[in-house]
Image (cartoon, rainbow over all chains, first blue to last red; front, side, top):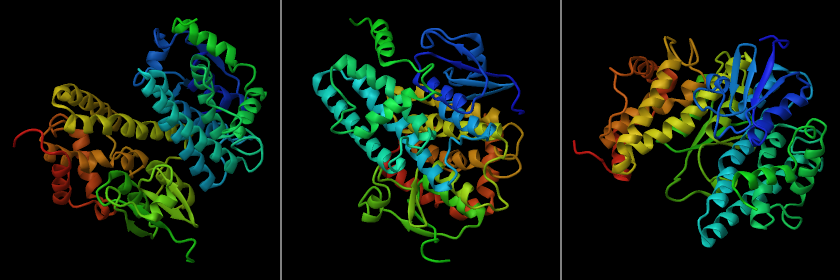
Length: 227
Length: 224
């Protein structure tokens, strides 16, 4: 597929997974048309259903006639289809495997922990779920310290695959913190991640379109009918 | 080869996840030392050291460093050893499709089959239908290709090793039928070619032993 074929991204403003795809495209300076699905859980466009018939989810990258689904898949595809710098996946095979391992950890374990907090029915359930999420974030903090080697991002000097993967947690965690009054990202336990989050949000390839904490919380309040 | 460069694999004899890695190593002709882990009994200090996050197998150790999660390991093997057998295609779109379908097998198919075979009786019909639909999807994706990877065994074939070999055994052990040759002629033909491959058959666990262990672990759900 030639690089100059039309690129479109079907995403959703509030979707943390869509965010991943956008960051990848912006890092590579790929020109694309963004097609927003405003309320993707309730209403899906014809184009989305046609382009992702299996999962019917965002993001979907349309490159010419091709469609690529699943956010981390989209990120890897963007890295490989536009192989110019900056590289998103590390160049070393072991570092690549490590980035993939931790991205999977985020998707499998961290999001499960987030969902458990949101879905907890009683106080006991909430405490247990919160404990699990704290554990996950402590592990991610350790990973950040090792992976960044004193530099600003999981990827080192620049945003890489694991930064993009982890960024999807920021919106959901902000919402949980606002609704529960409990801080999950804390100076005492996750100092690296707190600074990383600020740096990430401020990055020129992210800032123009990543929803702010206030915007995400306001959206969630409206959606769940909470004051 | 010095000690550091030597490849070690910590695995479990009956696990399709563990076998994925062995298949990739065999296909690429990479020698390795195999270490059986008593994952359900006593996890060794070595496992806890090399996979502290999940404490599971498979774990590959190479150059003194460990990699966990079977499909992550398979990609690592592909990236590290450039041999004549390639597991992933070169084209970015083909690679994206391979990763998509491998994940589909992991996330949808394996879970659906497990629930269908050994989930609660009340859910059985629903779960069997779900597993059947997932497999129909794969039947379509395979089409008339020899393997999911085309002419040779590739990433999706390795990811789908469970369907090629374990599914039939699950069906026998549980008494639940999801995939038949009549309903799934392409997957049936593929599974025969897959398990018939010299490199693949070398690593497959013995069927009778697996059936016995599965029956003991989960019990047979229908009388046969």
